[in-house]
Length: 91
Image (cartoon, rainbow, N blue to C red; front, side, top):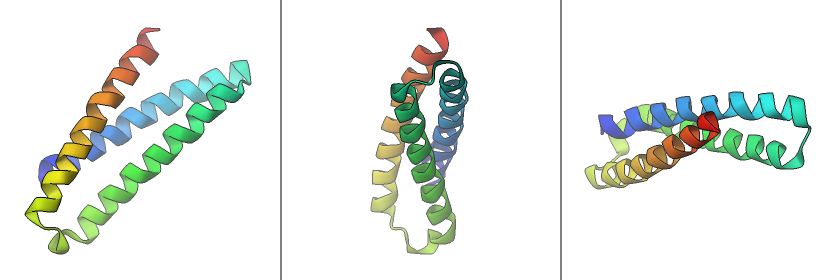
């Protein structure tokens, strides 16, 4: 259970990192595509923060099986966001 929560926190940090770059790019470019990236990353951040809140607020109601699914989803998201961060900061 704790690993899923840790991964959601890591995902939030990765999304904040992406938002930092995207907002900086938008200030320079004023591009609709970059604005779309900001909206997308913002909603992903909101989803991760809500998931963290619900894990803490409703921990007594979460089953072991549900947390295993949350771990898989959070793990896949972490890998995807790490790859996107790498490409964003490297490029």
